Length: 111
Image 1 (cartoon, one colour):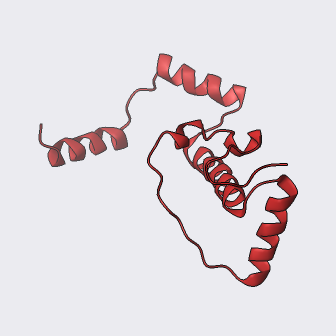
Image 2 (cartoon, rainbow, N blue to C red):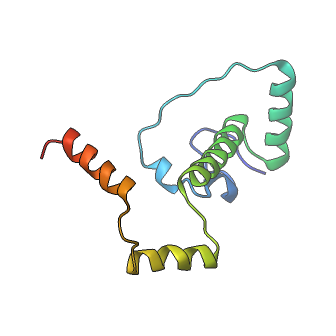
């Protein structure tokens, strides 16, 4: 049984990946939801032994991490990674389009 007091610890899963969040100043986020959404959130939180706030924050945080990783990390197959690395080691010679682009870039940037 988890004590739902604001200053009491919660079960371990509520802190996974959020260790640094407890050291930072806390800000409030509010949301207006329909009764059916509220009931579902309350039921899920109760099943996990947490408060609705703990449940919402943890699941939103996990989804936010997933989105950030998906949108900022490029995953390559081993074959593609080898190709990219070989291009670093043996870059192709610049073609006319690249040379023209460099001229345009140098004309628009002040050094």
